[in-house]
Image 1 (spheres, one colour):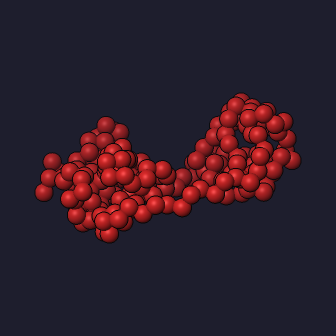
Image 2: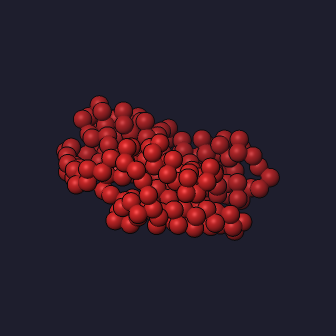
Length: 194
């Protein structure tokens, strides 16, 4: 079966069995009136709910931040508390670069830590960043790839299983795999795809 069109008539089974780009999901949501905020998993769940029930479920309104701390203007120190309205920006980058060095950069693991540690200090964050950086220097360290990053997971698994292949080879098989019904995880049998 060819990959079906993503429209109101698609079955839940067909929707679940094929890979969809986030842009495709957003376009579908806009055409139906489904909310498009959030990550790919949240959007996919809203579409699945719509296909199952025929109803557009409105998500709850975001809870407004309680803190009025201005992350772009306030003087930041190691004692500054991470608030519920934390925002990256030049002021925050400048603080971390001064404390850590010019090699500082935001990364997914660190940002996840910040979001999960409201109430801790920027000094705690500096300590955590250095811990993460040390961990990444370990040659045996393999970072976790979150489930919504199916392409990244496929590429890593393909290249680990086929060390003499290139990223271009992996991408070729990814494109073949995602156009087929079923899982988007790498399998050795993918090498037989045409």
